[in-house]
Image (cartoon, rainbow over all chains, first blue to last red; front, side):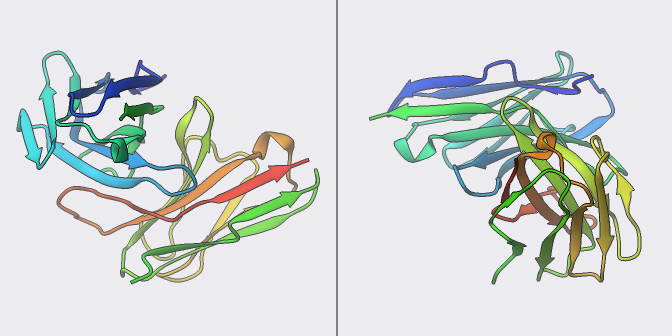
Length: 112
Length: 114
């Protein structure tokens, strides 16, 4: 049973516009959520995270929003740049656990 | 600062052969992990080690064994490789109690079993 779901395998946006990547989860015990970015032939790299006690966290062009009642989070990238083209993984962790649970990823393509 | 180093980067095995994937981190992290990435499947945890001397199964442990040799090194062994183990393997580490639980990943090992 998939606890972290990214229902859009791919997303294409124009340079300068907003990219919105979505993620849903089923486990209400998750208390920390993270986004990772992965380029081809490289390992994933940590991008941004949010605690379950917050509803928004911002870091430069990247903002993560958390809606606990809907068990939904989203990553906003504004403005999108061609260098943002990558696979983005949503992940979650439960307090006291050592294990991140990953979604299947969304491939973002930013067109010049 | 090397972070997490995986060797080899590429490997082709014949069915039934064995091999060990090596992973080392230089960040003094307590926890280490092995994931596999397959198309459309995301990242799936094979095994992890919360501290030196301990290992635990993840989501897909069958066909694999691990060794936490010391705090720095965590190896993954395929005793008898099968085509279903064709995948990209990632090692990761994290510091216990990290504020953001951010893992640091290696660059991966692309394994093909023929």
